[in-house]
Length: 539
Image: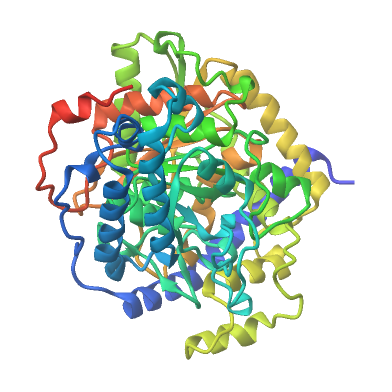
């Protein structure tokens, strides 16, 4: 029987060798796809004309509760904004605007008659009257649940997924469900039902995936916050590519029922999480508290003393087999973040080194091990691939790449055996628990590069292991926007903590927002929102 260390070494050697072989093939596909998908014009997103769009969900909820602005006005403005930008983005699967407007009217009527105090309202309905958006795969009653699959056309969700139900119960008003790749299996939002979703900073590039529609709408100020799901960075990659915040909660603290695709396998349930995307860091806390029912294990109401945090960092994962190198700006922002915590907060700093070369094959093995009941076992991948050249395929390129790896895993690695994967997982968990403890964070790239061009996702498979580390170990992780490249594309870094230490991620994200400026709009701002108006809503 192969020992743990022998298996580890063998698997990595095969992964490294085959990654180089596949690189030549993928490079051809990348160039061909980029040529076919080239779009001119870096930015077509129009400017906002109302200071409502420059406010956080937390601030909007405060003003609505205090009747300084009506829910109907807020919802109406966001609906008009979505109608304005979606023809450019293609981020909406289906809307529910009429229902949302009626729900906003009901909120305003309720506020005229309620005897609840502002404090009681904020505790019971923290998002009362605030418009939100929801990733299609999370299940919203009466809305499509196609998830980009041609063979699911016509599917309608019969009931809310639990995460959707909780946010609506907290007062949120859903405006629409948003786009995903086919069955959420890609880091690029493109499918054969709704087509591709564009990045608001450059419509020739992807918004990421699989919560790509959320990232594009929120970044364009067409949604104030939204819900996404994350199994290998599906919240955090779109957040990084679209210049916003995204949080993947710890494993087991958010009810993930209602998600499509679904699997009863323990590894799937461990790695899948549902979390918020938003433009402002303070909204991460309010939505995370809703989704986790303010689980006492997380201590989300406990103030974090940044002086007591141990800051660990890695500029890359040290894997020479990776096809993408970490962008210099991402490395620079990690260094600047470390310097900030060293100089301002006198934190202990550690340039931690894991044996990261083995992360990639293990995480890819994990991904390929899922039993996906939504895909027929009889799909002829080669035949479908040939059909795709002529635009006649029944499945998207992202799904075909997944099936190729699943049907022929030895193209990448030697084994996808669950028992072997679990040995790796246990080893990593023990090591990272020891390093991070209850007061440590790890600053790490969310993804090695800014958004790539449409059709190039096949070139980036191994890079999904950057965010996949947190899924593999069940850790909380938050993407923080840290600026724009010289080409005007956002980059992000992630803050990772030990399990159930989500509060550390959220506190550090808010601190880094003050350092790097957070969300930088993909359009010129004309409103010049009053600082006094925004400051008054700090609650």
